[in-house]
Length: 368
Ligand code: PEP
Ligand code: MN
Image (cartoon, rainbow, N blue to C red; front, side, top):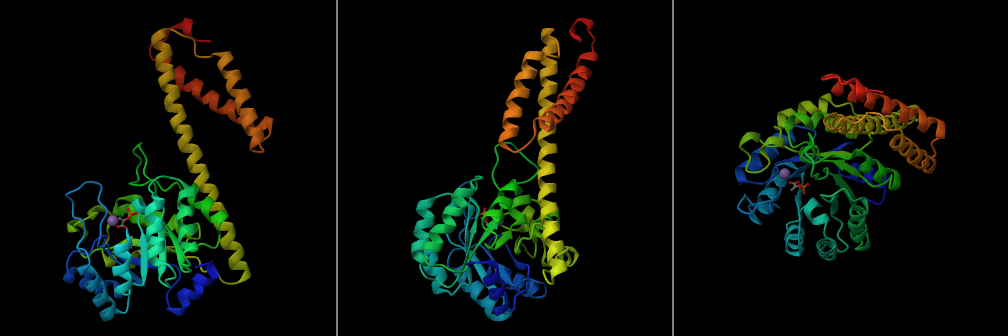
């Protein structure tokens, strides 16, 4: 899709809903599993059924997908339910087989998007197709790499393009399987407001109880759709069991989600305002989380000072921080007065934290 208007037209052409719901199992397992899920999904708001048939697995030896026989099962699911069908392609052979099977929508997985060689091969194999191609973000939080992949497909004359936000790997464990780094997706939206953006709450959350909130945040940020891993028996799925929900839960979720319709001037104004407010909320959360982390380090410093009998307040260090941050503030259009006040408040909190640690075994020499 060159832009959102085209995306809406495309949805209309297929009589699909906005936001677009793509759902289905992480992996196609058996013909019976694919067909029964398809029939259950037919009763929900789902427009496109997904199922992976070639599975990229972190470790060898795990279930690596059923392979091309799965295409036949998907075709049958489409014939029986009328749902559109989608699968992941990771090389030229996959693309050729998927095109031959007339799969409606193809996606490029996070582990493929990281490699310009792989993306180029896929783009060459897809050249000029009118299929919809969705590019998942690369596993690492690199916006340029993500957009580079989109550009390779665009240059191969693929018009129906969109992106899927599935979160990013982090070394440090977070409560997410793949950290959403909402800010990065927000930057992408700011730069390319017209590129259709789909959220994948299953791979972001890694756990089914997080799916609803992640979808709601995405919708508040004006995303165009969601891809939710959905299985008839999630706990016994052959891959990603924890992050899949049943078609019934999916149905309930789409009822409960606040979905903003974008019609009328007043509604459009409200939507824009809400989107901007959600962007601010995302940043505020990041600021508070980072401050929490900073405070923990301050606690460790407090403990270290205590052990070494060193005073809490070190004026030289504090003045250095202040000067550096006032300078950084200028580059970000923040007044010196604001940066001073903000840092003083942080510093005060830090000192109070350190005092608490010291007072556990108070030593008057160390206090100032
Ligand atoms: C998937 O969608 O099943 C998948 C493997 O996703 P990702 O590429 O985001 O890990
Ligand atoms: Mn999966």
